[in-house]
Image (cartoon, rainbow, N blue to C red):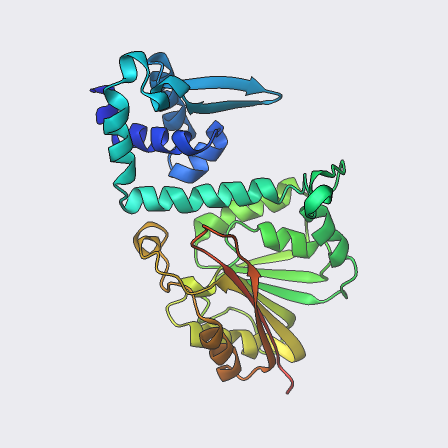
Length: 304
């Protein structure tokens, strides 16, 4: 019971009761340092509450099956653990959402494709990442602004087909990490700038495409952020917005710093049109049953 008196260890057990996970995935889900996750796992494994299994290059952890069955010495522990797991709080709701993200990433490795009999078709080497990069080769050489670029993953992908990418983020620390990744990958056509979505440090009519991927719900004033996207676009330029559909997961505001709980289709359409864009289109881009988050994809064109 002393071992289980730690909230992080209870969260670990709760996750491992639902899914076998590796240390990297657990670190991402729980938002803890990898060393801390490894230490907690070691203690739980020594207590025989968690089992370890090595497959290929990965080590997977899961709740000991005897614990979940309430067998032997675990007969009195499991009912209490089960009741504790059901009592959701802010931390466990965040864990659940991030676990869904881990599952999504696994699915999008493209190991399986299609439905019915085709779902079991294995095609070595096929991946969504390669497919998106292939589509990028069909795009014209243009100037792109990545607004709220974060760690720079999308920035670097765009740099493979764009003439120049301007990566904007408010965090100097995040920008530094993104720069280091670009340096490791030898990508040189990126200009990094620190700035706010509502005050983009670029000249008027300076880019052809403005991208705001999972950034608008962090903006203090989304309408002003979209007006800035309009300002920096050349006539004929397009804005591309990927953001969360409206949801009720209020914990993201404290845990992730979100300013907005997503946007409805009508809200996002009105915001983009209100910024001056024409030919506005909003669609649902990704949605899975049981996942509290869905992604909206929206575009608009600056025609003047």
